Image 1: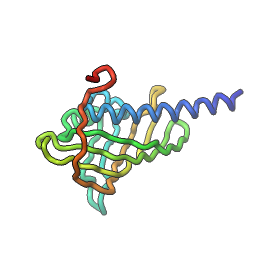
Image 2 (image 1 turned 180 degrees about the vertical axis):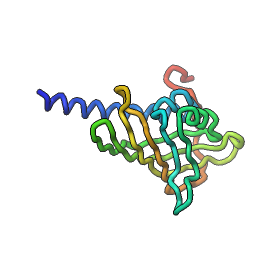
Image 3 (image 1 turned 90 degrees about the horizontal axis):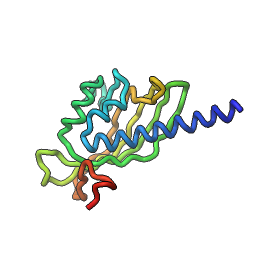
Length: 161
């Protein structure tokens, strides 16, 4: 019976992280800093991959800084994630998530949208019975500007026209 319980726990862990990633994308796209920052550990980090020996272009650490970063992000857009590849080791896990991001700068809503393709490398940690993001590193392969349809934050099935 223990084998079934261990297997069930592994499935539940995987599904919980997949749901965490879905909430991550939606809450960031909606600029919901409270929800987005709650997905990280208290000392959680969001950063860009450093180029060469230089520091990362973007580095945000801690709940308050993460909340502010999300709420005040100067861009509006939508994340499109692929399924994460996850590896578990007790109360820690790592993952890689390929992504596409379509967006524009808030100050220039008439400009063409930017499409970014890349991936996240993520370290997760289970704290208080919940999986959270301990560190997330963004790697961008390509950015291009093109015309795409816009995304309206906060819209869902309950608010369809």
